[in-house]
Image (cartoon, rainbow, N blue to C red; front, top):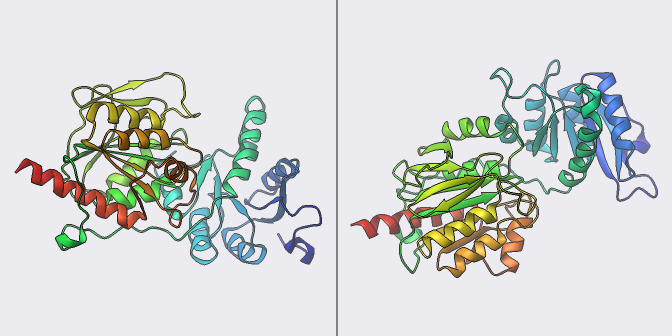
Length: 367
C-alpha cells in the first residue's frame, strides 16, 4: 500500500513508538491488525504491504522497527520476502500465520532459518473467545521483538575435527561427561551452528533447553537432524544422558538430571516464568555431575539460566556465555556475566572450539 512522505518519519510525540509494517494479502486482515496495533499508544503502524515484493521494498523505504509477515501470498511468499529482507535490510520479522506445520510444506523451523524471530497464529483468524487473549499477547510480542538487534545469519561454523590441536582450547580439571545448553529468543540458529559442528562420535552427552513456542519442537528437531551428525530427540522420562545423542527438553516439562545419568521430567511450577526452565536443568546437572559437566548459555531475554550457570561454575565445571556482538538478545548471557558465572564469553565459532575441546579431553580421559 502506498504511503505518504509524512509516513516515512515518526510523528511528533511518537518518537518512542514501535514502528510496524504489516504484510498480508488480505485487506481485511491488514485493517484488523492495523486497528489492533494502533490501539496501543506505544505502537504505530507506518505502512501496509499486500505482497512479498512490496514488503521487501517498503522495509527498505520505511525502515520499520518490526515487520509482521504473512506466509501465503501471491508471487513472492513470506518466506522468500523474509530472506530478502534479512539479506538487504535486516529487520525483526514476526510471522503471523496458521499454515506452519500443517501439511509439511512450511515449518516454523524454516521460518526461523529464513530469519524470522518467531511465529504466532494470526489473531484475525481466531474465534471470538480466543481473540482478546491472543490480541494482547500479540501486542506484547510486537513490543518485545522490536527491540531485538537482528544480525547477519549464522550459517553454521566450520567443522573443527581436522584443525591443528593448537587451535583447540584446553581445560583444567576432570573431563566433562555432559554439556547442558540453554537458549531462548534467537537460539535455534545458534544451536544449529553449534550442533552441526559436532561429530557423530561426540564423546559427551548433550542436553538442550530451548524456550519454545508451542508446537515448534517437532519441526525444529526435524530441521536440526537434517543438519547434524548426532542423534537428536525430545527427552522422555528416564532417558539416559549418553555420548553421541542430544536430548531436548519437552515444551511443557522441566528436564532434571538425576543420579545414574538419566533425566526426570516434571510438570512443577514454572521457574523464571518458564517451563522448561534453563536454571532447573543446569542446577540439577551441577548437583549430579559436579566438576564433570559444562554449561553454555546462549541468546535470550531475561535471566533464566544465569543462576544455573553459576551453580555449574561453583561445582567446578566449565561455563560459557555467548558474547554480546553475536547475541540477537543479550539478556540471559549478560545476567550470567554479571553474576560472574561465565568463565568464557565467546561468539558461536569460539563456543564450537570449546565444545570440541571438551570432546578431545573426554576422549583422552578414556584412553
